[in-house]
Structures are given as C-alpha cells and as structure tokens.
Amino acid sequence: MRASSPQGRFAEGAALLDGLTLLGADAWGKYLFCNFDPGDVLHVHLGLIGKFRAWKAPIPDPVGAVRLRLQNAATAWDLSGPARCDIISPFEQEQIWSWLGADALRSDGAGALRARISQNGQIPQ
Image (cartoon, rainbow, N blue to C red):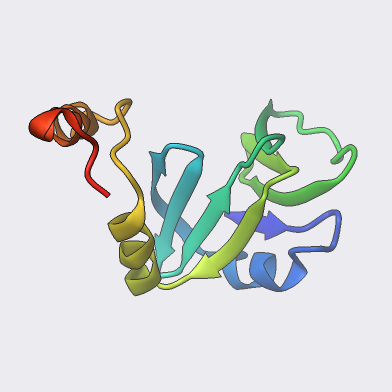
C-alpha cells in the first residue's frame, strides 16, 4: 500500500506507513485504529469535521487539505480534517482502549454500556 501526505502535515507518518501491508482496521466511536505489518498503528480521531473519502480507479489527484492518502492500484482513501492522526505502538493503542468508554455500536459494547448504566441506576465515575 502506498501512503502519502498531499497536504504535507503528516509527511513523516505517511513515510513510515508507505509500502507496509494493512492488516486490519478497528473503529471505536470516532477513533480509528489501522494495524500495519510489522506492528505500526495508524491512530485517527475524526473529531467534528474529519472524514475519509474513497476513490476507485481511475483515482483522481487529491483535492483540498488531504492529510493522508492510502492507495493501492484499485482504491484510494483520503483523510481530511482529523482532530488527530499519528503513528502509535500496539501498547499505546491498548492504553487508549483502556480509557475509552463503552461503544454501543460495537458488538461487544452494547452489553458493557447496559451494565455500566444499570449498576444501581447510576453511571460509575
């Protein structure tokens, strides 16, 4: 996979990802974690205005303030406007997960959220 930073604000991070294999992606609320071989993790928080836009071949040149473009021969994903975009370790990913609240949209999150809310009718601090 090719990684670039057309805007230039994420040039160092894109250089670290360029040529690596994307193993998988996991969303938790507005957080996105993309795991690459050999262990780098792309950490994105979309915030209020962040978004990914997908393009199919023929892939056009980036338009606007594209922080990160991930591309192969058939598809490109452009990230613009994220609140956060950085490369972290799997350990840092686990730390972030440990302080995130339950995500009702995750298959494992609805039960956890229900349990937290139903504890004596109060949300634990």
